[in-house]
Amino acid sequence: MFVFKSIGLVVFVMILIIGVFDANKMFLLAKKSELLIADTVPFERKVALAPMTILVLGDSTAYGTGSEKSELSTAGRLGALYPDASLKNLAENGLRLKGLLSIISKLPANERYDLVLVQIGANDIIRLTKMNDIRRDGETVFKELSSKTDNLVILHSGDVGDAQFFPLYLSPILSRRSKEVKNIYQLLAQKYKANYVNLIDSPISKKLRSDPEKYYANDQLHLSGGGYGLWFSEIERALRR
Image (tube, rainbow, N blue to C red; front, side, top):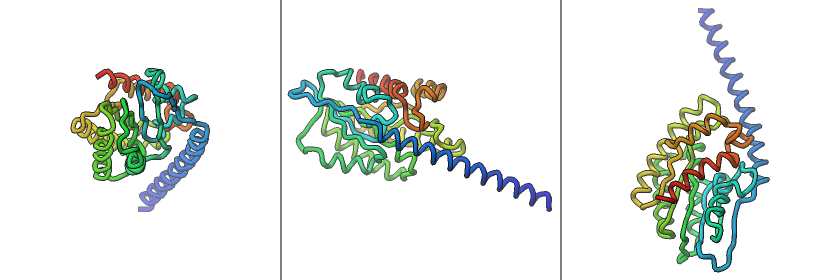
């Protein structure tokens, strides 16, 4: 009995040590995230009487957090693809679906865009937003934005569980949630005739996992410019559909 109690105590202490280590690691990485956010300027471009108008919405991935310069973000690469377009970027760090609805509600009622790119949902996955809430708010996002454009391109993230920011024991939970959100978005995209960018089942997922130092920023959560480049290759494919 004493042996079993001793083993149990050792296991408890080991779990406690691992928990403290992981919490400290995430705290330090979160501090790096704060620095990345402070150093990032989202890509925007105002062109008078532009032949094309683009609206970019979403969270830090649409903001470009982690990219070495704004031109390497997905918004920046979109601007390079359409050099004559006027591009408005209303992305916010930390944004969730519910927060995006607030931004959408403030858009001019009669304003339309030639292209709307939305990157939203990663924070809902990470912060454990209920799937029913994601489904409800996601439906409203798709519905409202489909009335603003004939070319709606939307994504949430790749497999969030792949990010080394999180401890290994959280990865399966985040991976499962990522796939559940993927399923929700796919159904909504079909319903509202939007282009959903499936980053989870794309070959780029393997590339991101194979070289995190190249494709992730130093906080091990946000992408680097190279990582956003991989994402944009899939966005560009969606634009050609």
